Length: 414
Image 1: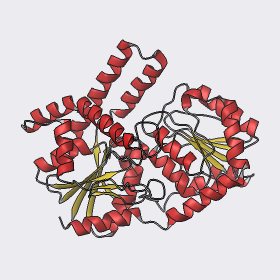
Image 2: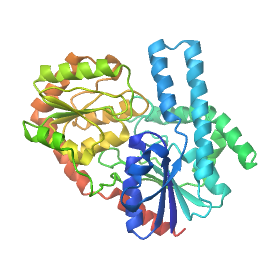
Image 3: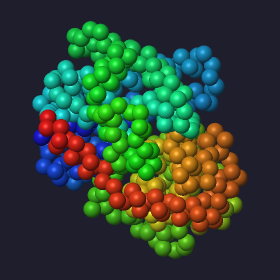
Image 4: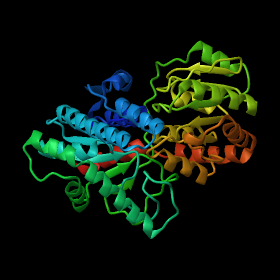
């Protein structure tokens, strides 16, 4: 079968799909992964074919978001953010329209790519399925992932419907743009969502049922597959400097904010170094998009390093609680100190605390060296966090999320 996977966003929105793509490739399918150009080389490791989307609107959008946070929510700042969101969405729609393969048998779409991708796939007469890293269907079991995590309640379903209604309104301009491009009338966020639900469009979710169980009130076609882990390139070798640092003392703390750019990198790096010293811990700081740099006798800065290799060698992980990084920390079986910045990150951070894998969530806006040091002492000093994290990692190791999706693709018989 000729399969195309389309995803968009940051590193955490791309890496899991390399594992899914390689699993489908191993099952005998012809697979192409569509990603932003800057990810093409790493995503195409070991024979996975890629197609690049030239424009990446997310860096600019995140920069506008940071300025919104710094300037305050003035009418002018909010207007600039709304304009940047629309420009990013229209740019992404154009890229998906250009990249979609009309000769594919099946197109798999991430949550960000799905609204436009599903329309484009249908326009070409190609079957499609959702492969989401976050849930977006309303349920009483939990609040929507763009809001704070709440206990089960009938109001959660209403909250989810309200969030989706808001997203549908925001997408109106994108659908108008797409309609003009394709010569289609009547496109709209609410209409497309209702159509998706009426047809029970299949969506497989790439997280573990041990982390977020499938809600009982979800419609047929919404399934929880389990994590699909990033592809592990066998040719990769760790830098000698990092290997030497890891072997020269007790397990360090990993600190990384991935693709986030949360404000002043010098302030964040200094805060991290002080917190590590106060907690009496060594640290490996990943520079990431924030450009963090923290070096000393007990701290080292690294660039891109596979989480599956590094995290299991650490005493705890400090991260922004994006879906991909949260999954990597759980897989490693070490305690977490989540520092969420925005979007779905507070929701995933709350799950880590609920499961006992983290002592507390520290929102970035309230982060201080003192608070981080206290959380690190708890995460590394209380053995209960390590035991619970290790037990959860053992459960995850028994799951085969990518295999579940591969079987679903075969059973679909497209």
